[in-house]
Image (tube, rainbow, N blue to C red; front, top):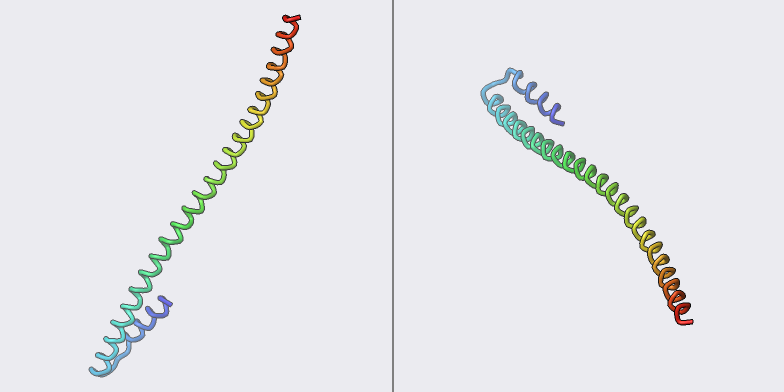
Length: 104
């Protein structure tokens, strides 16, 4: 679209016309230049948004990877806690048995 507007401007600039036609074409060229400027601004804004989305996507990917690592660590710790509880229960049972044997 921007390219076609530039082509139209070039076409209008190269056309040999009368003074009234020249004024008309100058106005049209000015309007087209304004449209080109606005479109270029929009392209720049969209490019910034695209770059921002790419960065956000990268951050999300990294966060998911960190979350997976943390979930694995949590599961490992939960398993270790369960193992320690079992050992503590066995130790307590063994202690009770030893105390009962001493009483006998």
